[in-house]
Image 1: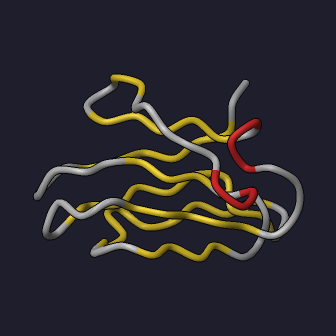
Image 2 (image 1 turned 180 degrees about the horizontal axis):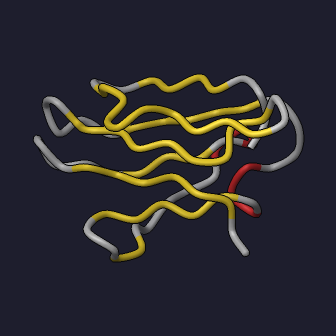
Length: 84
């Protein structure tokens, strides 16, 4: 993930954002109200490079405008990690 993360939702970072070499390597977000979440970084299409999980299960997501979007539930924790 790029070194800039923009997230449009009712979220709060959980257990921090992990960085390595000036790049975001993982993010854990908690949904406060259960609204849809949109995340965008600089660079190429994020949907090809990032996986989103909730309780270890893959989350369905769409890839609008090079970012990602996914549904959330109030109180849910979502992990964003690079695809291997």
